[in-house]
Image (cartoon, rainbow, N blue to C red; front, side, top):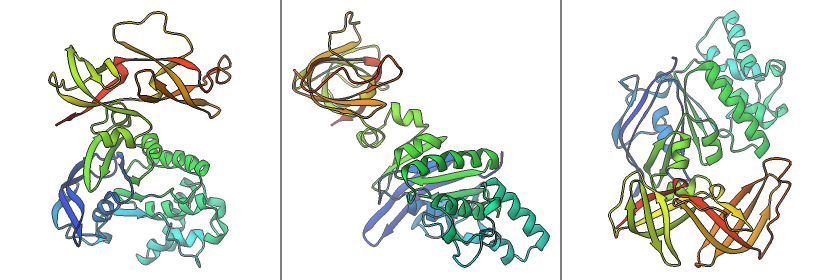
Length: 368
């Protein structure tokens, strides 16, 4: 496996009185596609810049392959960065932009030509080698920036919001290309983004950050299905999040009571105490919506009745906001999966039944 392990140990960073990173520690595996995900100002770009050598922490350690690199300048760290704004030289051709670092190192011309051609082919820009950046699309500029970073053969590639300047469709296309490049090159990628779908789509693992703190590290499935905090549950995708009291426990199924909703059954990895208060979540797509009451309701199935307050048809799916008879509002997503489900049969102000399994509802936090 190419690339380097990256270990961040107890990193703290402040700008004046503002704490940007608060005792952040994480381990990134060699060859991993690892994403730092969080809202603007959460500290993810600052952490990336510390790894690159553009910022210095007040305390902590950054290890690349067990070597502390904090005393090394950026050019000696075998780390390269792809920036959000591409940072291409406008007066140079695509070929010369990619070749720039090799020319600085005074490599032989034949070697430069061979390596630049190799990396332009990798990013599918061989036919654009003599164009200048102004003649390229946003996606093409980003691929030039990636080729220019990779030609130095770093052990770690840092990507700081590299797709944020692109439109939605091009972002999706570039994500696939980026993932393909990672598979071909095999080095460690550390990807900074505020876009949950980007992180979920390409990452081997994700670190969710907020207010300078690391909230959860896990695979995309772990982050989505079993969020560690209320913030993670709300930030990753769409969800319904409620606070309730624990009234019964049977195995890993917990029965909860909240104002307007009694005896809702959910699952828990760590069982709370009877009488304690917890927050729990249920994803909208895990709730079934129908005009008729479910014919058979198993003991671990929650069923409740309500009125559709807002239906939104989006082609491949419909979203419904349903006010239940118990006085709470749930968001529901119904996928239109095949020819037999051509569109919404449920309309505004219809009386509907909602049902979901205790296995799909999950306790997130214990409340004090």
